Length: 300
Ligand code: BG6
Image 1 (cartoon, rainbow, N blue to C red):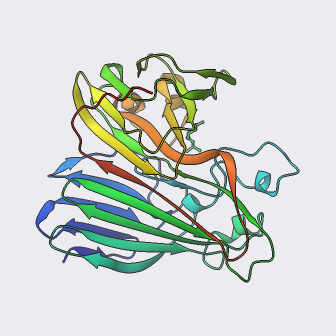
Image 2: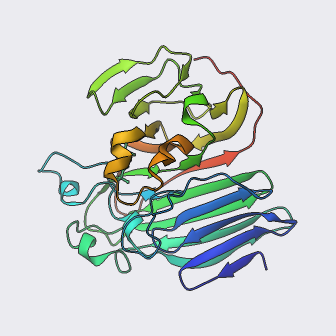
């Protein structure tokens, strides 16, 4: 069976190759494992909570309707915790949406009626989220559709982000490429500038938002010339690059081992610098694809 549903998760294997597979927790509709030919692509902290007691530290948590913490107290989104409510809600498994010998897709849904009620009580908005996850021999496509239902009484304002934790061999040998020339907001220094460096390298805590990144940009995570991961995206103009490094890792109870920062980097495709606004009855969609590609140099 390519799709197996358990009480707390769904496992999907490629019909033509059982060593290519992914697993999604119903809590947060969080992908917690994505293997190609037996090789794990995602980082998952050994202390990650998988029981619904807190968002998962690793895999692909989903960020909606706010990225980070909204500071403007006049904005209703400021009532929500960091990164919103989607990663802290149980999603509904909607089943298999398509399958062939070479691909299989499943869907999850989230609506206020089933979302975390502690959080929906803080932010009173209608919404329908449909997440489609499609596995092929060399890729995992994650597609999101957000709808402000026709019956809604107000506009829906939101951010979206796929908060992907990639597994790497050694952060100090790792480059993130093809973002040279992008506008950057450094969340640690709280400063804006244009990135002129040919590649991103890591020597300390790193938390930056690259904005207005073209959908033609293929961001790659490279270790000494070998491409470990390639991220393609549609309708997601921002990329957040994050590594907690030593001190921040020590402060995160669910981050283990503490040396784990050497084995992960988050490259997060999203729409976070601005809010998307949907009138009642309108839909918005976007996607990211994690795939295999040869080393590609793209200048801006
Ligand atoms: C990143 C943010 O997206 O998520 C960081 O840019 C943040 O600032 C990180 O520290 C992890 O957030 P959280 O809420 O999962 O600890």
